[in-house]
Image (cartoon, rainbow, N blue to C red; front, side, top):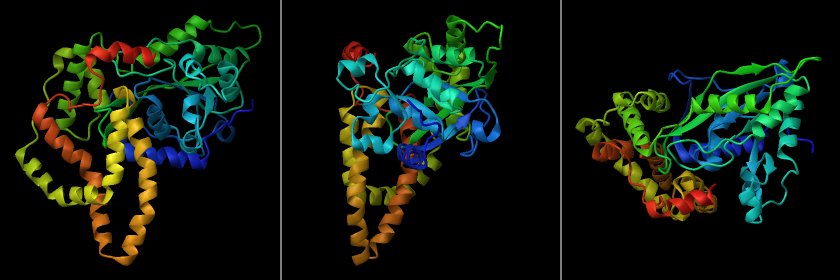
Amino acid sequence: MKPTTRLGRWHRSALTLLRQASWRRVRLFDPHGSPVARFSVNDTASATGRPPILIVSGHRCGAFDGLLVQAFHPTAVTLLSTQLVANPYLRLLFTGIPIARPQDRARGKDSGAVPDAVAAAAEQLRSGGDLVMYPEGTSTWSHSPQPFHRGTAAALRRVLGEGHDVTLIPVAPHYERPTDWQSRAELVVGRPLTLRGSRPGESKPTLSELAELIEARVRELSVDSPTPETFAAARRGARARIAADPESSYAAAFLRTQRAPATESAAPAAPWSRRVLSLVAIPALAALVALHWPTLLAGWIGARAADGRNVVMLHRILTALPVAALTLPIHLALAVQWPWLLIGHALAVIGFRTWGPVRDLWIRADDGVDAPEPSIPADNSRARHDERHR
């Protein structure tokens, strides 16, 4: 198989649309909370002479973790499950190197998969293409990472053994509220490490050494709490930090609190002046609901159909997007006949941009810990949920 060495313009645009539709703000930080620059579209190994890049990412929210990684490196190609390219609609939005996981084969969704995922990943790097891999292999919303598999290390070892240098960049997605539309999402980017390919007469690193390196580099950036209680405490501490300073990094605050739980505190209530000021946004929010209720309703129904909080946003957006596309010509036709409707649509755009901030002001002040998430499976179904996403 000859790999696609870079993501094309169509799919870059599609992923950008999905990202902006899902979260109001996606930002890139290092582990200490300093902003990180994204890669340029023109920054390729062939153009700059640098080694190919292997991005190894934590896995929290299914396919939509890739939206955050793509914000950092817009042209890197991803190894992705065949279920994400199973029909024409999904292929409009997602592309990459399709692989069949055991659960994909069990569901009969392995059509089109590459015969050897390790060989396909190695060929992508060998060809000078940048690559994104998820060593956990699957995602679930938990207080710690899933078991790390060795396929990523095997592909890296194969390329290094052939004498090719590879730059390893660990990243980890973080979400303040993974199920809430237009909430905050961040990607923590670790320090790049260029691994030197084996030269004649040199031995290549062992599979265990590379697997341990990858796991350690990803874990230090990821949600990795010993218990659900310490995870909840770290979330409280991080939300307290961004409530006090909205421009700060939620992820960096979470990682600090995760390492030192005693520093956490409850998120303070938003000042009443800010909450009252948010009422000014009511006309804009009302216009959004009145004009786009079919899309919002479709998203709500899609979210309710999700079987775990890690895929709520995926279901929400993939269900709402076709409805938005179908209703757009109707809105345009009505605006031609009644131009005053353009004012309503302008207000709806403002409502779209203010939905998340207004909700955060009121929810954070009311509960101080977590927004209600009724679509999440109850505790007594957790074992079934984990088995399904294993």
